[in-house]
Image (tube, rainbow, N blue to C red; front, side, top):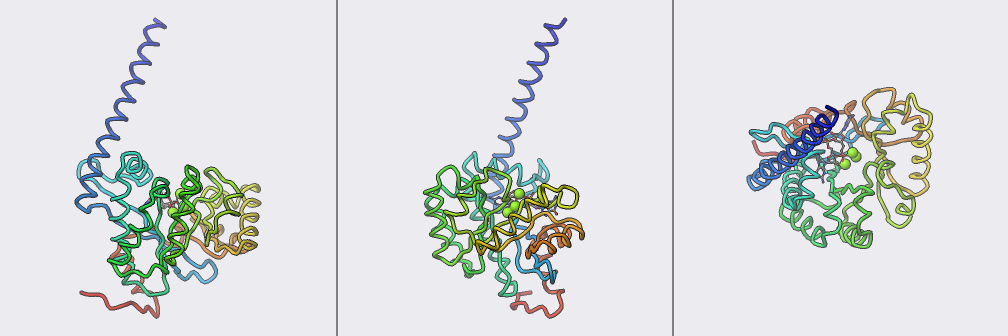
Length: 283
Ligand code: C2E
Ligand code: MG
Ligand code: MG
Ligand code: MG
């Protein structure tokens, strides 16, 4: 009896793994088609000045709904795109759409864009980004590239070269999800980041967890000393925003200020602001 159920467990487990592998392959194939057809969308989430609540820029976040598979989270499809070699064309599609949308925003708003780890070992990344900015006529000084510590790890020398290329074009570099991943303070000494984004994990527990509070205060002190801008991610409650302001944090992002929206809704939001000065938009 025990033996049989033991075998049963092994069989079920294997079948589950097979199902999971099949699903990944289905997602991969559908994603290839979607990228070729230009069917992955760029959405935008506001980043605000915590004190004034003015929007200062937007982060680009990929959104994809497949006809059969439904809506799939970037947390699922971005790693698959990475593993299966689709991230290059996917990223180029998104950057083109994002910069085309952001061209119509007020000049002073920045656009931030996530790069995946594999793009930081690909020496073509800098040129590809430049080519897209030239084509869409987007000012590189309004662009911010978000990278993670994991992205810097696999080949730090190559990552450093790519970061330098981007910097020379006037693009700013921001360190995303700080405090999770494979943190190394040495990286903050060697790389020059313009901005640091404090991971949501610390922000979500800032009100009821002393360690998180201390870590956030230490990060803020470090950013100030190193001359880096700082944004706290995943702010959902007013009380979290208040506490962050009290600790001296200047930038914020989270559902409290706005969820990611598509290009049209983002433009609508910007138009509705008092004193909005938008560039002329067709239609
Ligand atoms: P990320 O770059 O750290 O982006 C922030 C994530 O937090 C987004 O999830 C955003 O929707 C979510 N978020 C923002 N505010 C809140 C909040 O108040 N509460 C909660 N619970 N979540 C909040 P999303 O859009 O699902 O993206 C997940 C991750 O997928 C991103 O994390 C990023 O690593 C990756 N990703 C998304 N779009 C792209 C892309 O175009 N290229 C690359 N390479 N990666 C992307
Ligand atoms: Mg990000
Ligand atoms: Mg982040
Ligand atoms: Mg994250």
